[in-house]
Image 1 (cartoon, rainbow, N blue to C red):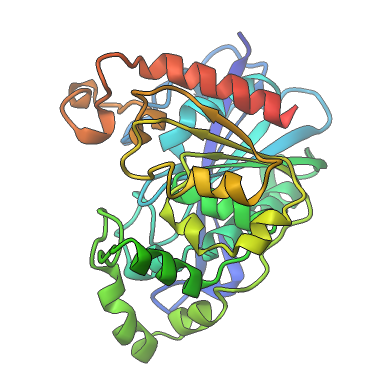
Image 2 (cartoon, rainbow, N blue to C red):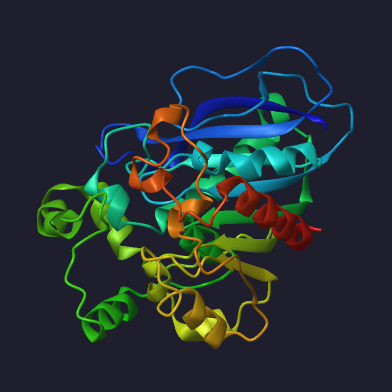
Length: 330
């Protein structure tokens, strides 16, 4: 099996402020990529999710240019939370670049703004692709004609926005009202919406973002998209924009997903566009089955996000999912 290089860093988006309104927007990133190095395999310390067999700061293989995959994590997660997929793709010749979305990432304290302004995540990925593809270690090594994107959970909203889906918060509010959903945020930040009046009053960065929620975040460099366990924010997309998507879109789900029930999310998306490819990976596969294992193995089976149905082998689900993703990107 080919080895996988791994490195991480932070860039600054000079076009946007951070949520604290006192500096440029940080975009922390992690990347997995092909390498011919054979030594230095390690499990870097301080990671919540297991990193597997990677070589930190390895060299890049000698091939001139590589297809790229942009990756968006779920609510409050990190790029490493779907590292199982990133490693597989890297070993197959892709450079995988995952964002850690400011205010909505496990790398920093949660901020209500990061949980409310999902559309900002699409810009994170576009800015990352431009920056990493033109400066630093990966400069001139990415093939901008072969760019794909994959998201998990809330990350599905991110990558679908990049493919042309348009957000309208009125759509989301109508869906919530019709289904008697009263929570003001996900379980990681259930009262996020309570902050809206104060943020409108006090935060220029929030006001600007909130006003731009219906903007067009399409990135024409992206040629195909995979959405894994799409979460309720996809209901903020206008049906017309889903119907008009031109890029190949593949959706992966599990039938036991109680965080993002298919009837409200994946099923609804497929109804809007008959060209969407849909795969369900099993009646007992839940939302968090698609997450990487923890670096602390004592958490397996004891913490909700690391607990699966007795009939489910998380590693096997990951293998099945990775195979479908590779087919989609091929």
